[in-house]
Length: 190
Image 1 (spheres, rainbow, N blue to C red):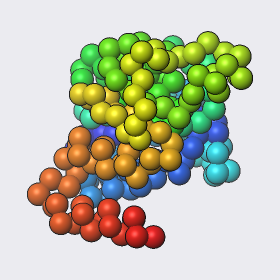
Image 2: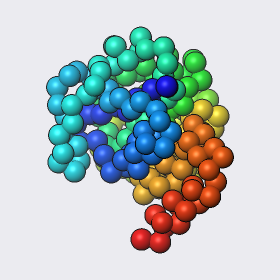
Image 3: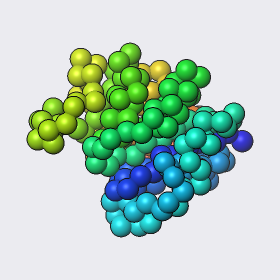
Image 4: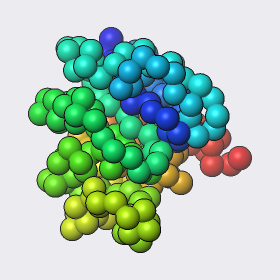
């Protein structure tokens, strides 16, 4: 069974990833592990408290990782441990999926220099924050979801589309097209 890692940090947008992680675990039968900078609990944007399963230094040593999911959250500094994991997974061409402001970490790791991407973080927002822009804007595409080989990025409001792109990449609903279509209809009809 392959492992899917999910990076969690203070104020991460947990709602953007719950559908994807639920189906990856329950339909795809993959192990989902949360990773953080430390073992300290973090409080998400919704106010829920999460405890990391692993720290990033441990995660980079795992040999059966299929991908990393990075939810959105505030624009913050990035520690080398996260950059190391991202670059390690990129070299192995493992899935790197980031949503909303999550692609900031891929940008700082240099991953977005060689692929198309999207993000909810505009140039204007970065300017107002008075921080260095982590995004190579020449590769930006104004779409809800962008998949470029093993890199998946999405705008925050596109968390359902983001989930389905991850399902397609991982083959979660392979040979289950009818069930996948019904799930999408159920979600969109609400």
